[in-house]
Image (cartoon, rainbow, N blue to C red; front, top):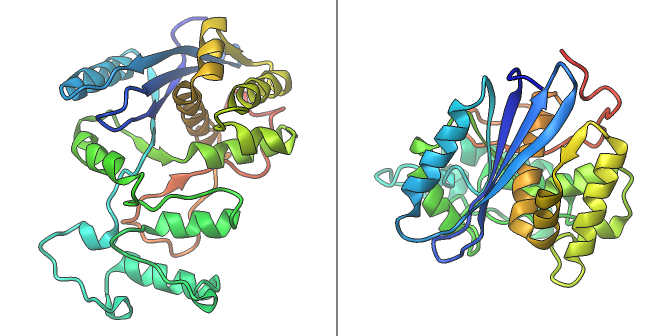
Length: 282
């Protein structure tokens, strides 16, 4: 296939006490219009594994003539009130002059969140979380940027971020699966159950089957297909890399008007993906 390919990496990062991190290597060959899942690597986690993880990702970056970036499932930034620990933040968020906090307040009002008796926490949430919740309206659970499940990943990524190969983008695989499954006209249960303990293996297998049937340009080796079906970490890494590829082709949502430039954006595929022309060389 030659070396003229574009590489997208997907990282499913675990906390330091969980042995399930994975990296997906997705290569696109414009000349043949093929998208190949080259490999999925599982990274065992221990207290000294960060150096090995960063070195591996940098090697994958150097091995690519055209690097699209690294898509990470986890918070790449802290909530606005925690970005500057030396800055005294007003307890009354309505008095804050922070651009992200101001946007969050205005967005909540315009989307009716305050009318429902809800508010926001600028020390737990970021603008992207509020936007995603409004976009999916309960169909996809969106964790807080520093919620109980996200906090260990946020802490780890806050240390790793300066060492990871750029550009870095943040993704939410569950949201990506929901959108991609919709464009593939998959049965609803596939997107709902893909991470389920009992039904997840069948859902993941069906998702990939629908993908390669609708887009035969996508190639997955049998060993990697088995890994993705059996292990959610492998699957999420692949979906993260696929989301980055879709972004490179112009098929991800754009930030809403007046979205603060300092705020992290979470990449989500559009509702409509032109699979017939997605792989055409540009």
